[in-house]
Image (cartoon, rainbow, N blue to C red; front, side, top):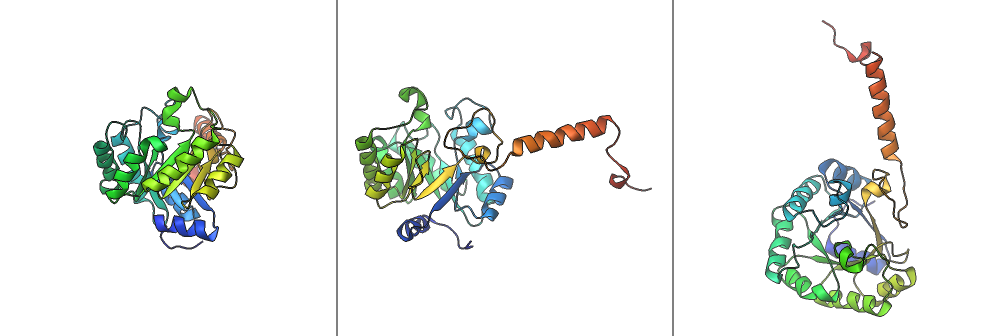
Length: 265
């Protein structure tokens, strides 16, 4: 794995060369260090922090200030990966001017290198303004979690014509890549073939230009539910619970600390 810094230009080069892009979420310095050292191409400081860290039922409650805080931690722990700040609910919907200002905070205050925002044709004016301000923007179409109440829940999106058009429109507006979420494989494949910018899939099949997962899902740290599109590569939650249970038992039985953990006079 090359150590060269990943940039938005790298994403474009990887699509052109047929190299798959890897992306995971991260929310703190320690995790960012681990994932970056493991060779992941991009770290998304996702608004999913609302669920997997804060314990909320959806992504809507997380604030702009909280996202800046978590992004700052991740940026501090990252050397190679591209750091993406996820614009939270109501940080870009009220006005274009506010959207540009909040996007700028991710770069100026938090150290991110680009931002992500949900929506297709309906947010093209925002994408264009953010891009023209010198801030790279990643789009996100299909199942958009910030719109769960409008969609009536977390539902797979199957409107092929609208989705393909959304992808083309965000590209025209200046997005450097687009996340495809909750889209059947044939439709996601057509989208990927229809645009020049990289597509990053999550629940959108294997033919996207890259894949993203929530870190807590990948390593088994979030047990409330597991989406169909998640592959769990480790059971860290169980490992942690077993370790803590053993610690408690040894302390209660007087086995820890042992002689090897004590200081001499």
